Length: 287
Figure 1 (cartoon, rainbow, N blue to C red):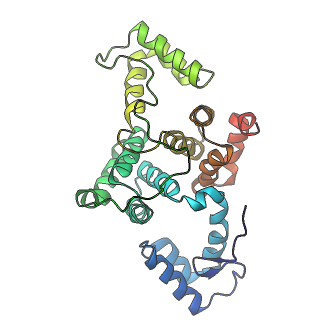
Figure 2 (spheres, rainbow, N blue to C red):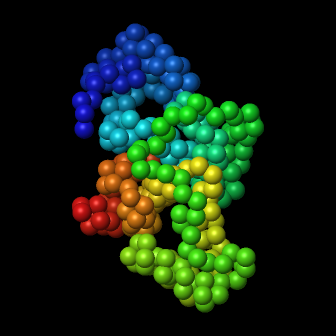
Figure 3 (cartoon, one colour):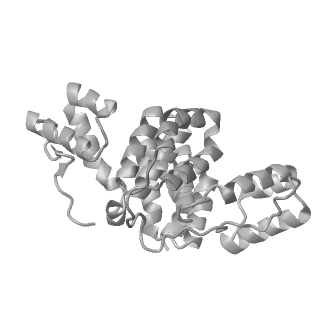
């Protein structure tokens, strides 16, 4: 990792017990410059315990590596996904502003919300509608820029399992196609897929219909495992962790990119959750 400055967003995080008025002004200026606005969570600690904010900021750059620092948009899209799943209104609006600042297309944002809806239920969509509808109606895509790391590309039908979605009923051929897809793509069949194939094959097919088509317009295929690996770590889903590490490998993600998704889960769930990653997929990440 390249040298990391002791100054983070205008704050001298190497000296948490002293915070000057000049630092606070620089912090606010940085957030205004990048269109983030002032966050209530940070303003609370600036007023009552600036050392807490400084120690938080000292940690935040270490969630991810150098490539993610160079291409920040995936991190912001991941946060939109997580905040939508949590139905965190203010977080969705904040990350929308930040994502646009870093080059997000309107279709990128809708693809992310589509993925989030798989796990958010109605609560997440109520929050997304409240925070994002007006923004999306008038959204103008920013100038073209390198939004994602090299090799990350949008690929229609990237996750096509071969199931026939013209019928809602899962045929034996549908299930066979899906099992073959898992074996070919991941090298193994997740336990959830095996269970649903035996007991609720129509539900499995309906789930895969959403999963395979959630990304429709512009997100790179690598964003699906990037988002869902983080979700699985935050929620403590060991099987999902393994499945999406394997899928990330299958679509060409590097170990560092997978670790970025995992590292960002520490923001939402604490470092203890990483023990699940070791148990579920440590063997895959040590390769």
